Length: 158
Image (cartoon, rainbow, N blue to C red):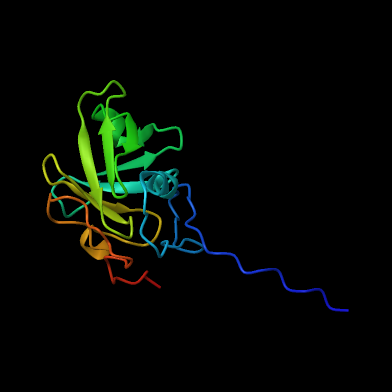
């Protein structure tokens, strides 16, 4: 007798450690937008992002650690902790409630805008090179509602 096939599992985004030869192989953008702060926390833990001070080109890099801490350039700017404030908003601070900055993500959780000064960023390790490629928000208005569909129609690069 032939064994029954294993049940299909839903794809999940994978955190990938940065390397000089990082590629998009095996990395997926989750298809459904997060519905709760807990969903956003799960999606971001272990991910790394580019920081674009001018809103266009990368000039920094940081990680969201599962512990609620940050790593990379955010630490240099005294933004050492993070927490999800809504389904698409993250608050960064100095771990004592000071120096707060809010990041508003797109529905795909691949790009963001910082409401303080309009800096933007994008997810790394998936072949993207700019916030525009991932349809990162361009307005400091409240987070999108997503209405069950992803906000960005940009496909993953080959």
